[in-house]
Image (cartoon, rainbow, N blue to C red; front, side, top):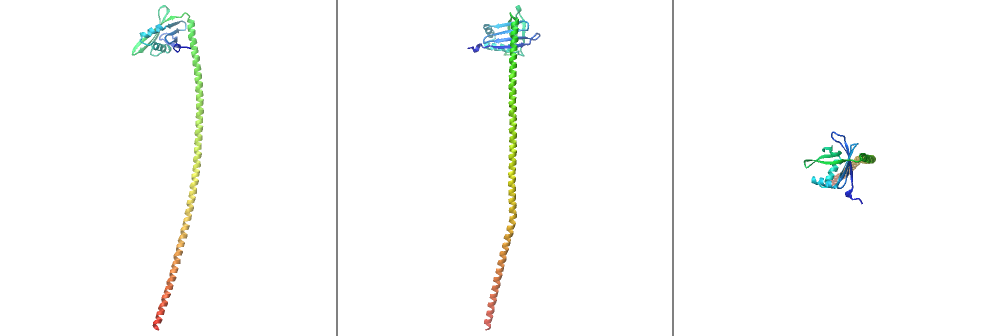
Length: 249
């Protein structure tokens, strides 16, 4: 079983230098130390920082080893725009790799001595192979992400089309339902209007019939009263004549 603390990470940086050709720095980062190899295309250099060396440097800067390695990986894995990098000559064909950074408002500089490689070709080929493999992995990742994006885009278009279809069907259903509702409502209004017109035409006839009956009843009553008055007058006249005859006798 591999210890998690001993897992390694690899970085490769194309470092742009002021007034000089760029160099390639390949780093291998461990739990407590690191190795770097450098090439300018024709020559190469290496720096194998041991655990003791890293611990000493971290102690000088009052840092834990893990923090020191994390910061070194950050600056040698990716070129930092605010840092000044240098790759200058040293004694016996060695090179001094340095970079600057700020800590708590103070500008600091880290430097590591790199020795000439015994096999420049191997170092250079190793860095180029790493870059090639990284480029292939990156290309595959881009292809996979592009495919995933196209698939998501296709699914999104299908969902959009389905949504539009459902929306159109909903609108069509609401339109048909509203048309049916208006048809039923208009039919009921027409029926109510016909009933109202029928009632309006029947009401005057009933009123005329009621008036005729009242007049007939009143006329009949007047004729009866007139007959009774005539009979009463005749009776009164007969009684008067009878009294006159009795007086004459």
